[in-house]
Structures are given as structure tokens and as C-alpha cells.
Length: 484
Image 1 (cartoon, one colour):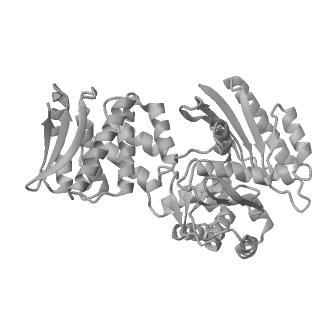
Image 2 (image 1 turned 45 degrees about the vertical axis):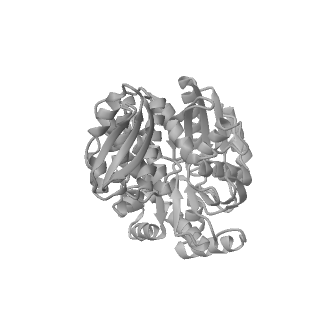
Image 3 (image 1 turned 180 degrees about the vertical axis):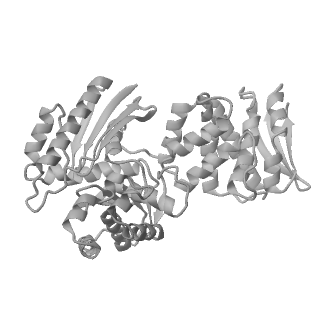
């Protein structure tokens, strides 16, 4: 496995992320170090980086260099963004950083937007729409079209800069509105996706304030109503109170209100009712450029499919088994729709396909409680390309494949019932089922299984696994072997 360290020298935080991957194969984050350097703090009208921040920046860079040396990571890609780009003494500071052992590429505004776009296009459901990257020194506003970056602009409203440059919320809102009004291409049709530490923190706080599941923000859709709740809570607290708000990283407590106001104004001016959050950021954009170097542009053709493929490669033990289970699950689902037992839905079909491919990944942890292990891996890793609600549904479907009873009359009950039968048809993992169809006989659902001679285990297991499906359909279900 290869390892690449991506270093993002941002205006608020310096971050080192090590990716472990095989070209064309599995990839994952191997390690991460973050330091809230706040290099943009106190730049003032003369746009000069201050000695205290420079000292902290160099100390952090030396730590990063030492870490890579000690961990044996030789492939290192380092970039700088807004603060290092615009500072009057930026070139001098970059020279000191390079003397400390870290060669740095300073991204121009278009390049910064490009890598943000790669992060969004490879980790969200957005193909055509808009993107927002909120950093410490600037925000990158993007228009995405045809899974590519069509338009972009860098605006001086990053969390740190917005906090220091504006005396209160009203003048900040006014400035953001004025800047966005000059963008003829901004707003209208299409969804909005967002990246950046401040955006993720705001989403995390919203989950807690709104009493929603908070297993991460990947795919979470932050609505304008949720955002307004967060802002009202932030406004009711002093800086120390904001640092203590669950979901907010304490080192962002002094800048998070300005970030939330900028985000709210962007959403209002663009006419967006929600923003899809991703855990990815500029660092993932830089990684994807390398990982997908054989593609132009370097984006996945299908984010959902790529996500499932990556988890199967990382945790799967028997890919052919998973593929056969998925085939029979979809055949059973479609067959139930053909006889009118259920109303088929493309999104449900996609969730069932994903759950079928991932139902066995818990075995990577252990056989006992494998269904719960699989649920944990899905929720903790997140499923880029699926929103948060869909991710939780997939995790719950997998959780109930071998046993248990989910809430009645739900998507999870219906799809778990289908997948439970399909998984049991593959109980022997021998591939001795050739086809699955569905018929009905006087109100009873018949699952017709084209089985090879001697295929007794799968038929036996499936016949013992129909109860959940039967309950969800409110009809008797029978498994009938043909050619067995």
C-alpha cells in the first residue's frame, strides 16, 4: 500500500493528512494531525503575517516534517492558501517554511476552488449545482456543471477574516450580500454543498441542538431553519460559551459566529433551503487528483458506486457472495413490485443494492455481532454520495439482516425483510441459485428459486427467514424451489 501525506497550510488551521491507498484500489485516511495555527490572525490593513503566528506556524511545520520522517512517509504534497497567498511578507514566510524542510506550493484562487470542487464532486451527491469552501481567510464560491468546475470566485469572508474585519453581524451581512450580488452565475437551480472546518462545526452543533443523530456530518443536510437555530444559540453566548457548545471545536469559538452568518447569507442570497455537508476538504481534493490521475477531470463517474466499492475492498471478505446476494435481493424486490405487493422506488432500490453489497463487512471485525459491526462501520465511515438519512437507513437495513425486528411499516423493515431472504439463499456461499422470481397464489407471495440440484442449504435457510418480509407485506410468504 502506498502512503501520501497532504499538508494544507490554511489561514486558520495547519493540517496533515496521510492517505493509504492502492492505485485503482482501496483508499483510506491513515493518520491526521491538526494544529490551529491561526496564521491569518492580526494581519491588519498592511496584510502582514505577525511574528507570533509565524513562530507557531514554523513550529507546526517542523512537527509535520518530523512526523513524516519518523512514520516513513516519503511522498508529501504541501499547499498554502489565502493567508500565505495575500500576505505582504508571504514569500518570506514560505521561504522559512521550505527551510524547515517542507516544500510548499501556494495555490492561486482558481486552484484553491478547483481542489475544493474535486472534494465536493467526489464525496457528495452534487454533480450540477454549487459549492462553498469556507476557510479561515476566504471563501470559495463555485458553480459546478457536468461534474466539473464551471465558475468560481474567492471572496474575503473566511471565518478569521470576517471576525476581525467587521464590527458586528449587520455590516458583515451587507458586505457578503453586495459581493454575491455581483455574481451573475450564482444561485437558482441546483443544490449546494459545503466544505471547511467551520461548516462542519456548524453542522455538528445543529445536529445536537436539533436533537438529531450525531455520528458525523458526512452527507448531512443543514437546513436554513437549523442554521438559524445555531446562530441564535451562538448569539446568546459569549466567546467562552461558544467554545463550550457541543459540536463546536473550542479553538473555533471566537470565529464561529461570523462563519455561521456568512454561511446563512450565502444560502439566503443563493435561494438555497439546505446545504449538503461533506467531511472531505481541500486535502481530499489534492489526494483525488493523484488517486484518479487516469481520469480527466479526476472525479468518480458514480460517487455512490465508488463509495461502496471502496468499503468492499477495505472490509469485504467474499465479494462474489455479496454480489450474488445483491442480485437476488434486487430480483426479489423487483418481483414484489411486479405483482403489486410493494410500490418500487428507485431510491429504495439503490439503498437495497448498497446494503446487500455491505451486509457482510462486519466480518472484518468478527463473526459474532457482525451485523452490528457492519452498522458501525457504515455509520462511522459515512457513505459519500448518500445523504445522512440514507446512510442511516442502509446501516439499519444491514443491522437487521440476520435477526431482529425493526420498526414496523418502515422502509428499513421492508428492505431488511427482502435482504434477509436473499442473504439466506446464499447461505452456503456456493452460488447454486440460478435465478429468483416472484409470483402470487390466492394472496400468498411465492418466491420461486431456480436452484441447482442439491441446493438444499439455501432453500432451507430462506424458508426459515421469511417472517420479517411476511410481516412487512402483511401477506404469507413461501419459498419454492424449482429444479432442485
